[in-house]
Structure formats: structure tokens, C-alpha cells
Image (cartoon, helix red, strand yellow):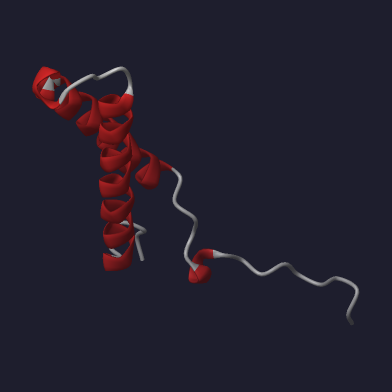
Length: 79
């Protein structure tokens, strides 16, 4: 089965992406901003969106294989 066919993979990927977007937003908001009215909301959305996209791409590229895809080692010491 393809790693992209698993519902749990996409749920986990979405969960990580949402957390990454929130963390990036908090980082931008707390990096030298003095007031709520001076915040560049479009810039925050752009940075957080890019961070979310990178999170999704990382999940797609570096997913741990499923248990059925792991090949058990052969024990050559047993007859």
C-alpha cells in the first residue's frame, strides 16, 4: 500500500502542519512587534503558510515506512 493512501498519514501530516503554522505565527508576532495594530498580518500569513507547506513536504518526503514495508533480517546462524 502506498504511504499516501493511509488516512492516518494525512491526519498526522495535517496536525504537524497546523502546529508549525501556529509556531511560525507566534515567532513572527513576538519578534520585535510592539502593538497589535502595527502587525503586518499579510506578512505573518505568508511566513506561516510557507512554514506549513514545508512541514507538509517534509512529511511527504521523510515518512517512516509502515510496518508491513519493513523487511525482517535473515538469521544465517540458524540451520
